[in-house]
Length: 458
Figure 1 (cartoon, helix red, strand yellow):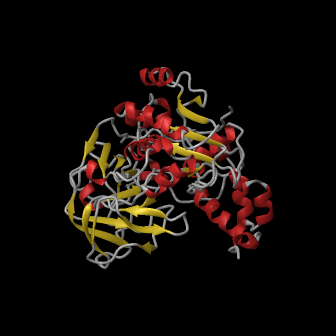
Figure 2 (cartoon, one colour):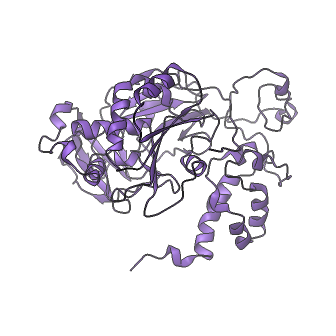
């Protein structure tokens, strides 16, 4: 296995291993959109009383993946735009929501189990390793990549989740294998000699279908596309490569072991703007304002749904945690410009180019804010983006081709290999938004060079 590029960003605000269970709020705001899903097909009516685990809406473009009611409540469809609101919240016991009519899991086919995961809210934890989309539950994969790593700053600490749920994690491995036939499961763990690594190795000994992979703790070596390529796996629509993380494995285990819908989430709430970064156990729809209240260190903050490099800023229109959310990153928002900031030697700032005075310091974690630290400038061809790129492409050269609108040349230089990790933008001394530019270029190439591939099949 060969991994290349990568770069670790040392920032303050990492979540500790503590897991806090949040009390249910008085009202839940369930967004109808998330990064991958659009729950446009409503399955409930305004004022309807719903049970915990009941389907509220479905995404017809993603195998009808459901949006489940996290709690018992009364549906309000007109209260908040693009949200399903649940009032009069009440939690039922797990025994009450188990489906006693379901036959034994052992008597079911692999495809039936995958369908059950879809209906019970656990399938959305799966990814197509190359497309980052939801894989088709009707198609068996060529392999599964199970990663406990989250290497982008402020992500969920996979080690902590596994450590706190070891029996369920090991049981989940067996359930994961039951979804396939003879395909391998690649278990990705850090190349550290920890007690957890030794324990997991011991537990999976003798399981020929599990292949243990140790990777360096370097971002973005937890990226499913990077891992699949390094394993020599190929992109394929008929036999895709599945990717799933530790929290997803716990969901698989709960659904297949207990026939219970998976309605809870473990999220990371971290970043320099958080008083005590930690893991929170909650439900989709939890009010974001209530989540932030009394947990941040500054009056003006920017909340990011996802990681510092790949996440999206949460707008005021979004009132609750979406069904896919795994982490919130909070940065302090500077409302005033730093006086003489351009003249500061940068003792407290990291620079990939080693141009700051922090070079003389020992290893430290930087207190990052929303400051851009300079305006965008033309590409200086430093080559830093190429050094850190895990895909082995030349972002600086592709950027110049895009500037000249040479889409055919851009395609020849394999922009399709970009994994969207965002490192090129981060290390760029000219502050070029290469990640966003490449994402837009993917769409442009598809529309202008391959319009037939965008047309719906008849």
